[in-house]
Length: 329
Image (cartoon, rainbow, N blue to C red; front, side):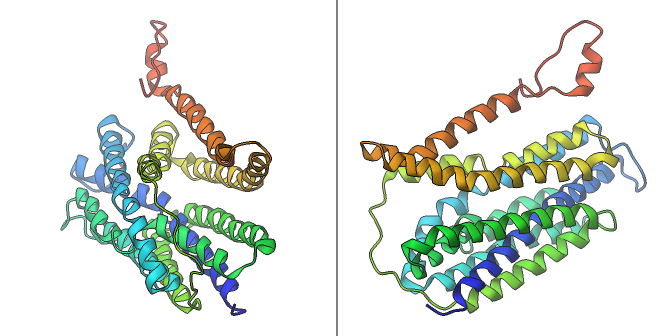
């Protein structure tokens, strides 16, 4: 193992997640600004929180995130290619594909008078280059598993996770601050970070696979597809929150969401390791999947919680007759 392999993996992980987390807030703000201006037909300050604009914004974000299913399905073929041609090469291609995926909406929004805003949906064609986010995260872990012994693997995984959490906190915070100057600024910096991440991925020494792939189970593939269906929940949640809070409170609210996600991510690592160790001590191989069973239960709980969220604007109108409907009902 080269002494540069693990540091380069840390750096690549940091640059990739920093670039990705810089972009969501300014992208949503840019989409809203364009939709708002096109709705009113004239530039200038307008009320962008009205229902037609927010409905279009939610529709844009929903379809945009739905398209991530396609590269997620391609994750398995690209993983096979990585075993044949080298993990670092396919990792670099995957990160560059994410750059193309994020760069296309940037171009569409940079020229709003030339391109209809809904052309951002074509980004899914570019996301097929390399397999997208799923392949990047998978290969980062595979490279570590290939070059680190079993006794060191957990510690290295946690360090990589810490680098990712740090990048996410810094990225979301920097994105919220920089977008006050110009929404395109953090978006552009995020794209530059992805290019740098592509470069560092290329520099990772080639690793070899010591043993063949385990048989692919059809149920596992179905699980990946189902999991991909929920990948847009972050954008949907932020879109819902954007409609509910005042414009001057959006950055603070996004920062709070980011902090909660970071805290949850930090807790999940030790929690999964603890649940996995419990599963190993039980009788039967099914218990090895205990972390996933608990995660699934938490997803169900989160679904009920989100479904019970109420729109305060509708609550104000319904207060007079004593009726109130859940936001997602």
